Amino acid sequence: MSRIPSTQALRALECFARHGTVWAAADELNLTRSAVSHQLRLLERDLGFVLFNRVGTRIELTPRGRAYAGDVRGALSAIAGSAVRNAGHGLSGTLTVSCTPGFAAFWLAPRIGEFRTICPEVELRIVTPRRLDDVSNPEADIFISFGDGAMPGVDVELLQEVEFAPLLSPILANRLGGIKSPADILRADLLHLGDTDDWRRWMQAAGLPRTAATGPVFADMNLVYAATVAGQGVSMGDAFICNSAMASGQLIRVTDIQIKSSSSYFLGIPPQKQALEPACAFRRWISSVLPGAKR
Image (cartoon, rainbow, N blue to C red):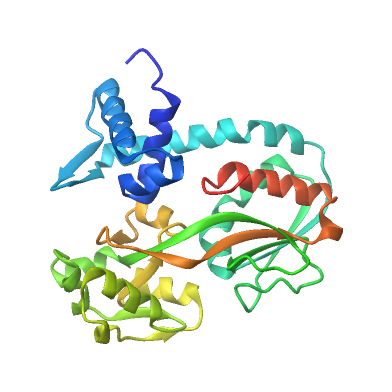
């Protein structure tokens, strides 16, 4: 291939790789499903190699397609972050970010080097609150919370909406002999965060008996995912922060049936902190790399 594929087609692929469905990619890109499908077909034709496998009415990325989508994501992030990197050069000072444990562990921590490259002289401190929507820490310059976005006295913007889907480890999948239908999930223990509500909602969407939502309940998301990776059961996973684990094969998404969370990730900056240059630089950086951020 001698020419570069269209940016729209590359964005369609990157969105599809993150969400796993055409309709979710179309929703993020504000396009119709047919338009996204058309872009994906054209991209596959232009590249000259197979990006997708057709499974019934669904499509899924081939190993080569996943690898290419990862390269595309890196390239698009580099383009989006160019202005941010230049704007952050030479900044100094301190920055304290209060962030939910799951977001911090699975999304922010693996990427914090990117921000450090942009603002190497900023002294960064990451803290985690007890409640996912807690914005009361007076030492925090920026809050990343999970909730309904209600942060009295704080300037708030939506970072990422969240959808939940069942996730399990390859170890457990092999032990179960594969998952061929949503009902097969019930052959394993179900892992819960806080309560069983998310699983009950998913079972209703899947047409399964809601009374089957039993299994151990954990108080922390990191415990849920540690148990999931260890093959102890199936969790109702946050498809956003678990995207890297799914892309690497550490976790497997076993069905397209998902539920939209009533909560989302929000970024908030107290009014007295909005003039801090490190806080502004962090806000620009995270908005440039988070695909769902509302700019």
